[in-house]
Amino acid sequence: MAITARAPLPKDRRPKMPHLYEVLRRPVMTERNTDLMQQGRYTFEVATDSNKIQIKEAVEKTFNVTVLAVNTINVHRKATRMRTRFRGYTPAWKKAIVTLAPGDRIEIFEGI
Picture 1 (tube, rainbow, N blue to C red):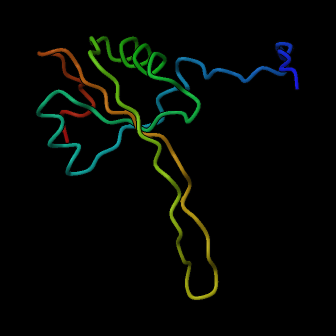
Picture 2: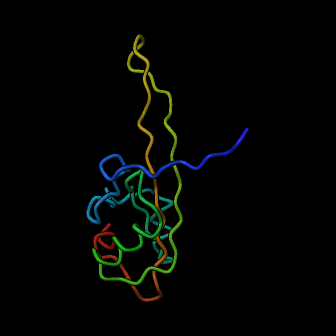
């Protein structure tokens, strides 16, 4: 059996990369993330099809800070029940923990 190379997809069928301002969805505020903020690490919900490079660019351009590292986690969906009859799932989402350079802060997190 011979292995054949696939032809590249036409431009209209290629997966779309999210725009810079569609990468960051919202900041995530929990007790653990509040403790991480003391170390200069901030947590965001991001687009599921974004990568670390896009997340770094989005945070740097949006908040005018220097990003040292980006860690991403895919948060899986969880089963849930609504009343006694209906079953469903919470949506899956992607979380990014961004480490900033020493001395850099993001102002929207500071008042919380």
